[in-house]
Image (tube, rainbow, N blue to C red; front, side, top):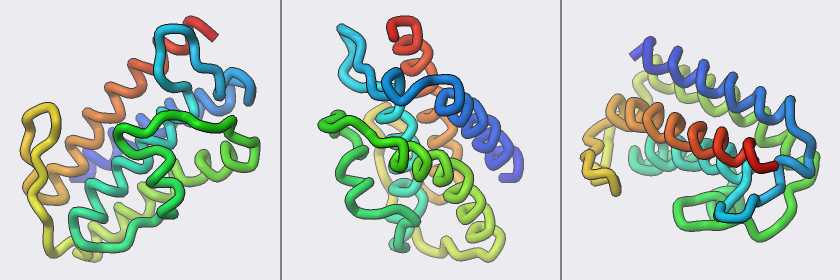
Length: 151
């Protein structure tokens, strides 16, 4: 499981670089042909990881319900994100993984509600959830690389 956390941390460092290397205007820009923007993808990654790991374990998530509603699967950017929100999202990139790793080490995840993903993979436990989360993050980093070419 340590390797999964290491992969996730590498992914989160890449995401952090998107926040550092793009202006607020660029983070909020939705290029023609795309349905979302850089900042939406980053926040969406955080939300999905929390839902897959915590919510399906029957535990409280480490993010707000408001954030879940704005960035869950099927949601679309409906507002321009402020610098304060970008800063919060940036801190959540590491805070949520730090907390997940601590909770995993403390054996907090005792129950898990099996979840069939839209890709056909069935997540049966928290280890599967974190592995799938790595896959999901990679997909969205790919989308973000596409968006970056047009902003």
